[in-house]
Image (cartoon, rainbow, N blue to C red):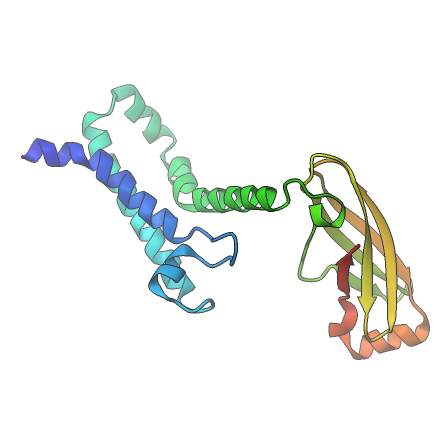
Length: 211
């Protein structure tokens, strides 16, 4: 009975690790964690507890597998693991969830955008502060990132709208197949426009549309 229990660790360990990993997988449609949805957690609450619990389950799964691996694994494999143990553990616990979520997100988007062209094949990748004001140059500088999911080149037009300035700027962008591209834009500002943005810094960021 004891030998059966020991051998089963090579199954139980990966199973516990996999469950812990699934808890922090982001669902493509909503971006919500699977664990948060399963346990009915609010979107912005208890995420840290969930991630800690997931990490604990992953570590537990690894330890269970290592218990079996240390007794039944080939000696050369055990030596190789011990040599790179910190890097392997770091990869499994920290990097694996990140890489898995990135792969799922990329695959889901490729499916959503498959067969589409023009603006329907291009996505704007938002950042916190794509635009900054440079008073000395009397200009606003923006760096906008677009992603083309199509397997052919696409040409689109970016439209940047500033409500405070009652102004819009158009910028044509050409993207080759499957390209993610950062486009830098410099827009001159008048003294009155600079004063408006200085009095309302939150209005520096424009509404960005793809046409």
